Length: 470
Image 1 (spheres, rainbow, N blue to C red):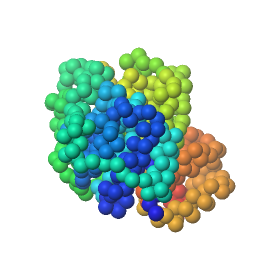
Image 2: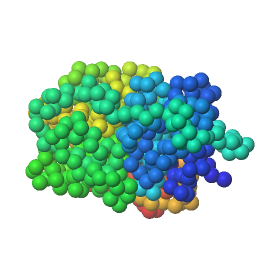
Image 3: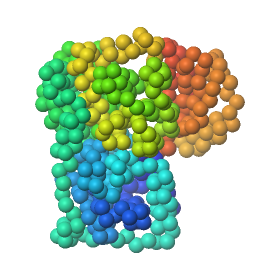
Image 4: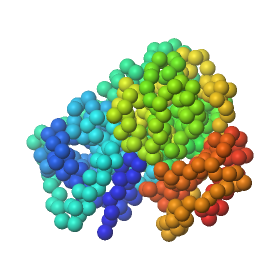
């Protein structure tokens, strides 16, 4: 029997295997059952979708189920970034949002993200309840209530909405677009064929863009803005025509970048530069949240500024939960998901790109220069993550082994502290760390490492591969 599980942000599966129209209808019905039980259904439901294969039709299937349950649906009139759906939920006062997207996953995947009424990722407690309802409905043979799409439109249960315009207006109120335009920074954007296509160019018309056509195969690689996927963007910056490259993942809630030297500018560096920009140039204050796989530079900046630091498992839903209950200036994760105070408790790759440009415009410096300023104060950090294919049996064996503990030394470096909050993190005396983490949604083992020298990073990653046997 199929088991529906929500990962770091939503339920995902291979199209036509796990992610089928029937399974989607089951998850949609169960989500609606949750909304009905919580008294949220009467506020309506926002439904959006990305540019993946069949995403629009999957979104329409959700609409058919919602309308069959007599719930008003606001359906986006085109593909949209995930944060635009989250903003629409907040703006319309809807009970919930559903985004059809598999984010950064390979092209054969699609997915189902829940956005709660506050305009952010569904909290762990919410997804646990939805999972329980799914299991109960499967066991009981719960009937899916639905009506044909045409009938849903005819009886007024569905309203097409233009979600981007209001979202862009929100972004324009957060950053100084005129200052950025006046700085005339040569920018090249790579939306990776995803839902962020045209967005930065709409806000900053002088922006050039690559990979903006409709391509559900994403050019043969996952739409994830990591170093190995941004070689073309880096080459364009190195050509001297552009001063910065900005990349978005498949649903534009995550960001990657290339600095003025043409080098990949990781999410750790982006987090560091934006946090300093918010604190020093925009004068904003509040706590900071980072996931367990995120750079130690954030710890040191928080110490420097006297900001309270929170650490969570991987997944922006944990950051979102803290943003709802605390005064949080910024929250971020290693995968490029970053969110800020005064917006929505949601990661937003487009806004982060604008904040990077605003920092450059205000300082007159490139991203590398801004980072170097910080590193001269707090020390130099080098990071690398590698993803390795691993079978389920091998994954389970590795997890059982690591759970037993007992690792005292890795690559001749003494382990001084362990953190098994999410995966298996080993911290060393000089602040270096290694995280071994099996993916919860893919047959993948992720290895993360940060140290004060690139050679140390490679030594630790090599040792991790030996431990994992891959």
